[in-house]
Every structure is written in structure tokens, then in C-alpha cells.
Image (cartoon, rainbow, N blue to C red; front, side, top):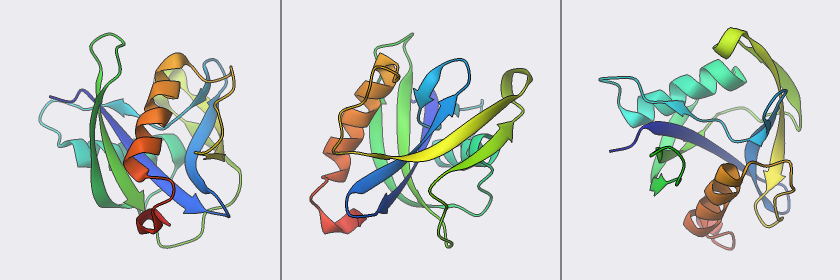
Length: 141
């Protein structure tokens, strides 16, 4: 049973990229958060996208499966999301979680190796996404 929900937004700008952000205290990350009791994983993913990135109008396009992170028994549920408008290359959003943080959003190319700024858990999540999204597949482009 998944404990964390991860909304996945992708774009193709010559390479397949996934939405990521810089946390002021914890380095580079993907949007993810705890699935609340009684909450469906897809609903949690959309809620986390609203809370952490300020993206209000996303919908679920596909369920990408679950992944055991190997960290504190966290099992992630990945959901490919889509929005109708083109998102900017970079933007900031103030998230009220944990007392409030300013997050800096950007697009990370899935074909690129993650730098040391990524926590090992997120490096594993990116590897999972590379496999699930089959970088060469036109389905997600």
C-alpha cells in the first residue's frame, strides 16, 4: 500500500524532462507527499502539486505504478499528470508546509545523471521514472 504520492509532470524540449524543485534546506527533489488516511493516491498527487508547486488545474493522465524507496518504509505511488497551459522554464512558489518554504521549480532532463544535490532517495525515483517513461517512447512526448 503506497504511503507517498508523487505527481509527475513531463515536457519535451528536445529531451524528456520532469518537473523538479530546489528545497531551501533539502536540495533537489520531485514533488511528493504523504497520502492522508482515506485519500486516494491520485487525489493526493494532485493535492501535493497544488500545495508544493501552485499548480491548480492538473489532471491525472496515467498511473505509473508504485516504487519502494528503501527509506523509512515509504512506498511511492507515481501519477503522470497534465496541465492545459505551457509551464515556464523556471518559477518560484511559497509552500506553507513545515512552517513555509520558498521552492524554486525547474525541469530536469531524464537522460541526465542527477548531481550530488539530489538525495539518494530521489535519485532512485528518477531511475524509476526513466524506466517507466521509456525515454525513447513517443507516448509521453
